[in-house]
Image (cartoon, rainbow, N blue to C red; front, side, top):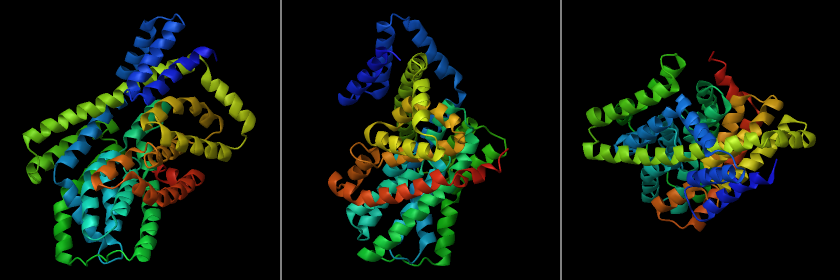
Length: 427
């Protein structure tokens, strides 16, 4: 490795400090590296353009973003919340459990943590505050349950991980199912104890007729993940095609069945999808430049040589990676963690013979916990804004939940079958 390697990383840090778009900072850093080394900028352009135009799987990203935006702009979230509430019934802290169940259902439609927190979270926080729950706790549990979004299929981070690692998107989607359930269980246990301690409200028993009614109303929305996953696992659709079908289906139910979406709202949805997609793809473009630099400087080889001389066990390696990505998650954007740092350590994953699907789920959960971690956790800012609470109060309520999620992370990290069990059913 040469000192030239410092150039793109220094520029990336400066971009982060001055709040320049991270993707733009990565591209400027890559250009500076090429110029200082006297290399042709054309090589960088070819690398970025070839990467963007030959990764077919990337088309799934705007499709899943579009699906999430349609869900959040129609009455689908209301139907999901009412259905989840009818499932829980008469329990201490019932709406806390409803929050968890609703997030799991919503995860099967959008695969986005921020979409969950900003869309469904608005309804959840409002209802919990209305019923007498503490506002900081309402925001904390909403932010924490949003973590489930990218773990339960579909998942945008899984799509990006598959592009980087070559792992099967279908197996990653299957591998996320059991871990998502584990997350629900550990958070449910926390809600149980905290609700007893603080004497949070007991839910109301829902009559069977009302349960049937709420189920019937929610059924079109509930069919979204079923159609999507069956399409993928029966081989009828690729994940990208499933994203297109999911987007078309959500449009159909929003316009025709729920009649809750207007053409004007659709225009805003399309614009929001373009903005979000543009921001993600700018980071991906910058990541291709960084990947070229990392490869040419043989960074991965140096990291492998150093780590293998220090660490001899895959379990210790996984512990080190968990700590590293938890720290990164607290400091940098999720996409930067995944696109810049992940390619550096992937050779070590192969060296220690760790299953790529298992590792992908572990890394994704790490990054989602990072969204909850101060000082830069995006979910903290989103839910604090929605719930009108101070970050200090929210962080205090969130820390025990982060501890609960770390327990789930340890289980998923050191019991690989929690991820790999479901993948056995896919050829």
